[in-house]
Length: 570
Image 1: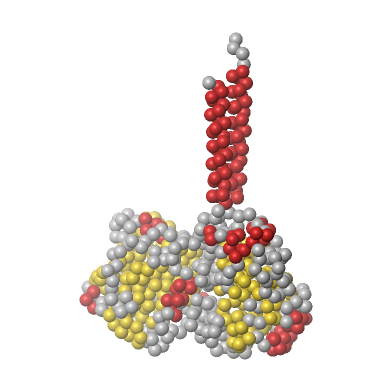
Image 2: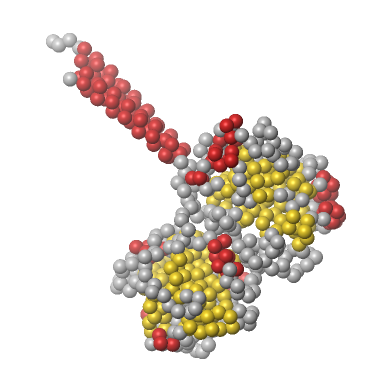
């Protein structure tokens, strides 16, 4: 019998080891942080009519008809009329789009302003929320004009348009009170009245953002949980309003204006998707880029309009290609030089020599044919160590490399950057690249350099031949350059002293040393990471410690059973 028990223990140990071997690669694989594209549920059409996803309500519901309206910019749209009276609204009746991961709201608004004493501050464009009989509440809403002190701190929270959220644990307790807006010190008073404006609000996890006319206006880390609102769909007074407040005491805060092409989404839209909505509309809008790191040159202050604001619109005078003679002369005498061209070129050693001698800085913007910033190189004279080198500035974004693709795999959502320059740079460079066509704002990223030495590549700055993937494994071929990158306004920014084919990933790569040995990120610390990395090395280590302990105990049990079974009976 004891021999049978020994066999059972041995079988049990073998089963534990087998399960651990199966679990290890599963733990090592990163959990994808990208989700499916958000699906639109239209509430008001571009013709100003309500869809089956909502219904009209209120005393003035009969006046909520399509109205065609031209604005001062020459844009004419047709929207549903919300007349001044504060008793008219839409209620969204379809809640199938609501899930705990987040949401988006988009609309074209023609706001008439306050218009009369009855039109108070905090008019509601939308107000999604509930209030239970005990006073517990949760609310997410957007207002074109708000002036209010923070209910918790007393500090001035909003002086202008904003995306606002609050959560009350009870009638007397405020759990969270969040505002996504610009502070009063920046002088923003309200959304422009009498003008067609595109508004987008997004929530993804603990990050909420507002976009105006396709460009990021404000973003914030929030405590109010969208998932709590979704979980309380069955609560008393749960309402999804367009044009009015959820609070009975705010009945005078109805929206006064027109709304067109109103949509809600079952997830957070990306900056690029929101920008495409605006630019694809054909509207003649005026966009203020003051809060989006506009690129300005001392020689000109006139904007160069692009047709796709998902990328930064540059205000530098754009040339077909860089004038190296003019750049050399400028960096020798000007503290900061910024130039833009549609065709990247090779930056010569004479430019780097002048830059090193002057200690000045140089920004090189490569833009699209419609003057949208695709990527930017920045060199500082103090960082130039070898001015004899030349640099081909061309970068192919969202490019290809079969070797990298084979090593990384799709689970990491790789974004390949093909640099024409392969090898060392004259010194440290700061590079900004548009990646909004793949990643949402706030997405943490890791940057790796593919080591193609020995694969037929030329490391002196020319194009390399395609490397052979079988010559290296991931640990040999990929070197971590930056581990703390975050997408901001569609761009990622990093420092490096070498270039080649690079790859961005959403989490650390398994089998690669994830200790940064070269450079670090220069992304602003104000951007909050919204997606956790999925490096499960600690979990794997704990798993095998437990397995080892079970093996030791099992072997001990087998030995004891064998000894006992052989002991002669008395």
